[in-house]
Length: 238
Image (tube, rainbow, N blue to C red; front, side, top):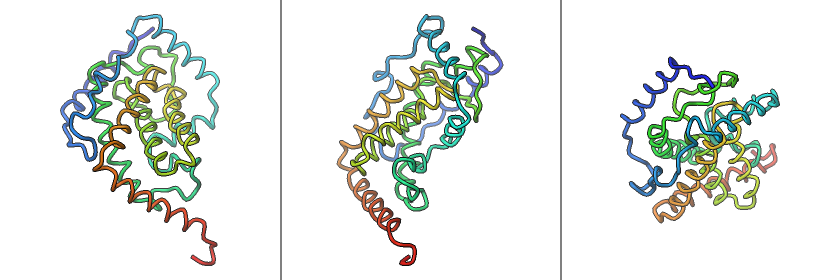
């Protein structure tokens, strides 16, 4: 197992920038979730579990396909379009501007929680622990635990389940896939992904239980219905 001290120094600088940022959440109530109490922390760097995670990632790396790499690359900037494969080609930020605005706000809100845990545990990315791991898409300079993409993939999927319950299983599967794709891309350990799912679910539960969030959810549900109706209209009638 090798450590790249120069790159880790860059990671430490990025973490300090995260700590210095103190944005006000748009939707999350202050102190609604304590992520450090919620998440148990990653395996210690020199544990057998940590080594086995890296070995698993090397096996996954050997089998990853160009199609998987393309999918991972498409998820670097996680937006509404990430769920088109479930909802249909009409499911875009252009057609759903209110949902796109919600996702952008929830990205900011959720990152405050996931970044706080990253800064606390300071777990290096897998490629900084084993230089046989190669990242074929845009790299990251923040710490690894928990995965912000897994957090948001889970959070977005659970919000969408409330809006489109008929697609529940497919939406949840897609949310999980978004997180796991970060393992396929070599950017996260499996335990980073699992932690992100726990955090994303906790955020979703907090939001969905908040009466102040319900009017926004109802408005987006109307937007979703209207966009789907427009997409179903014959082209000649548009």
